Length: 229
Image (cartoon, rainbow, N blue to C red):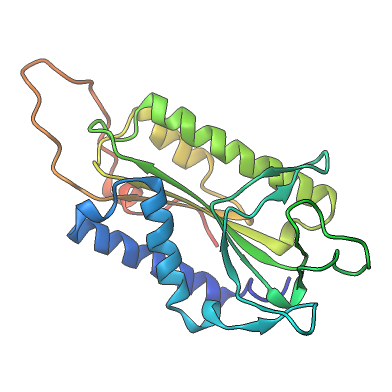
């Protein structure tokens, strides 16, 4: 395990996510889509000196920065099918011209990197019922994608070189009961941190007898972290 996987950088990332949350609570209209969430977090990350440095790559005449979006990762079949929203990689372990450690051409994405990395999977539940069963199914699907990536990394003895922040923002605080169970089930991992941030926007009014009955999670689960570092 090497840079960027340091405890200090993990703390910097957690604080960056919290700043995005505070901004969106203050200005709810700043967050309309998951792409907005991605842009807001990338902006925060790039404001940090640790992640905005220009570093020489494996190609000595080419420099790069650490933070990137929609970088594809190899699956167990050796295909580029896994695509986290954000990747923070080590530019010193990056090549645009060849596969790292060889003279072979890079894969189809036209670059190759090894070493340690942070990855981020971002979800935004914007419906008035918060995290519903349907929204949770969407979250589970992406979480399973991350689990598949770590299964592949484990097979390569590389799982300790990657850490995932799985971040869920929700415009409204309501959530189905299964969401609390999901948080509990995935609360303990050395390879990812599940962070849930409701924005507490007042829900729209609904008529008498309308709407679904939804769980209001206890404060400790609502606005904090669901797994250890």
